[in-house]
Image 1 (cartoon, rainbow over the protein chains, first blue to last red):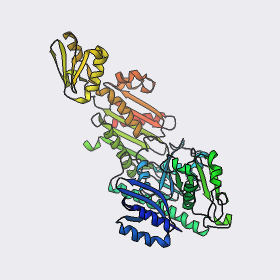
Image 2: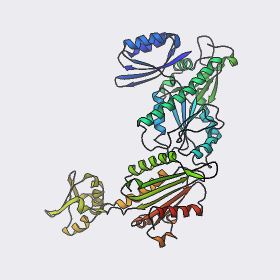
Image 3: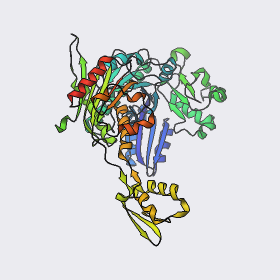
Image 4: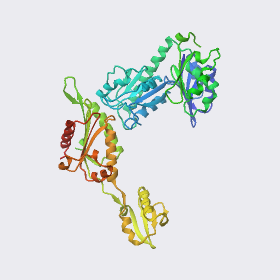
Length: 305
Length: 226
């Protein structure tokens, strides 16, 4: 079982952290260098967390448990018009990214209004490619209740934010009130508190999924696949996207064209003698030029590595 | 009186069929209205405004009484103009107006006859008789910007799905009955809005009902319109 953490410290000697992580069998997910500061998203084995803690103390860095590192959250908005953008949607997305998650924003084609709101089958499938869906909704209670139809049969956990402080939604896993339509940056104390609540709700959903996964463990941990892809498909280093490999709880999305790279991905070899195609389902992602991998659990493959 | 300038009312239906005002939703909508009005610099343009929303039906109404827009700014108000050495010399006080002034000069006299020795001054090689024309050039017309901003503000405040809209501007009671702006040509907008006093804006996702328009009229009288 891996433990997701973020390390925040100086650039000087931060390679020692990277070396240590590699030695104890952990993985680097993402690295952000900001002038003299560096932010690392890491996956480390739970048993060896103490070693890393000691090292970061030595370097005067800050090590933090980040349950959202390596998760892929999708924000679903009724549309991408100025009613929702940049506030509050971008503020919410930014807040989630600070916790280590990677976010995608999806504006529905016909999600606006009350009676006229609709969601397409394709949009549902696109949303279900992620770990958790966060619906950013508006102000009015009766409108929100009617718009439950948008997320009625979405198979991943759904968190909803909206105006009314309390609301009973049958099909949502969590509801966070008090973030309705806002046209200014969320920076007041009351608003920040709401954002914190929202992050906690997403964390609860993610942790629930991680706990569920322990009953029937994945054949291979996604960070391990990520590591092998980086080693065996050198073209991934030429991808211009800020996150060429998007890690999820039970899989990953690789930003390489499906047609050209499917066979390369299938043939990735592991030291244990298995090939990747024995352990994952490979699909064309609904995102342009991306491959979606979903790791099969032990009950399907009969082994774990 | 001051606090009542922008008023928001949101209805909430109760289970027994009656309705009351929903404080919570009103507060959120009020926040949006204030943000939009201050973002678009409309605080001085609106005398009184009332916003009504019935989420159950659903329909949305904005009624407002407008203040007359500030008069247009002429070049002679923002610059010193004098005749010196057989040329017209301009010395502008504010840089914000420079692009529009230079655009006007280049278009009318050609680039070769307009010199700009400094950031805030211009020398035009023309006969003295042109001074009148130059000094009366309208550098900035707030009423033109105002109308665009006003419509923009209403679009931003209205719930997003409400795409069926009935707008109405009026000078007095007689003209209110027949003309609607929705049918008017774009070019007519600017000329018509000058001197308009009252307006209402009804929006919904369903075809607009007559009752809603009547409600808008009632609200307009409530805030002091004719």
